[in-house]
Image 1 (cartoon, protein in one colour):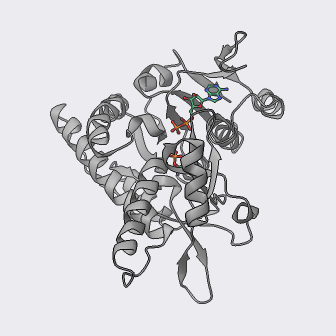
Image 2 (cartoon, rainbow, N blue to C red):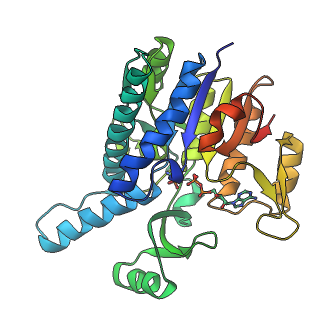
Length: 311
Ligand SMILES: Nc1ncnc2c1ncn2[C@@H]1O[C@H](COP(=O)(O)OP(=O)(O)O)[C@@H](O)[C@H]1O
Ligand SMILES: NC(=O)OP(=O)(O)O
């Protein structure tokens, strides 16, 4: 029977730049349409770390050329990243659906997510954005621009920004209406545009980037999904990752996941938020489960043939 699935797309589903994204979304759409073809309802979310960093850099350089230009806030860069990624994704999905004779409307929803202005994350930036740099280049950038920079899970240095937890998806009723109507919707891209509630009804953009895995868990709970699939660059979650005694995991109970988290098996900023998000969703109702696997293995994963299941 068809399930309602929230699919969270990682960096490898989108590539790191414009030409890479155009190619990557074609493969991504095939994996997603495989699930639609099997009768599942899907809501798609995605990351935006490289893209929001690229957009912010471009906007800052505009400002450097013409100081009269009003500086573009990071929240607006987040909105631009949703539009730009959604544009490519919805077109690739539309084409793949039509090629297989499936008539289903596809849209991207600009999605805002309320965060707590008192979230401790504002005092300690942890979310890597933009491209990788050498340590030397990163420290130079930090000194010039006042940015915080950090080594990102053994892959190089990047700028880091605040990443508050998502509290509430503002456009959730629209997302539910679209999925209930059998439509395909790309929503909460880049973890959503972080906003805070102010006096009256005004929502104010916040300079931050929400983690897309945490937001996807919140989205999956809010649309009452059966399953959250986090698609990334590894087929399974491992313990002792990258060490000679590395062991791939097929299934994790919440208790075991918590134990492995406390033992430090999952790198912060890469696998840790995925396991935490999967755990949050799997624990939200007994029948719900989360799956972490490779993009190309989504169909096998949902059939129970691969990936790491958290339930
Ligand atoms: N314990 C672990 N098991 C599997 N992969 C891990 C683990 N710890 C860190 N990783 C790394 O985390 C990566 C996924 O994180 P990341 O690349 O940030 O995700 P995203 O797909 O959302 O862009 C994997 O490709 C792998 O290199
Ligand atoms: N917003 C976000 O989590 O992006 P990445 O998955 O690209 O880091």
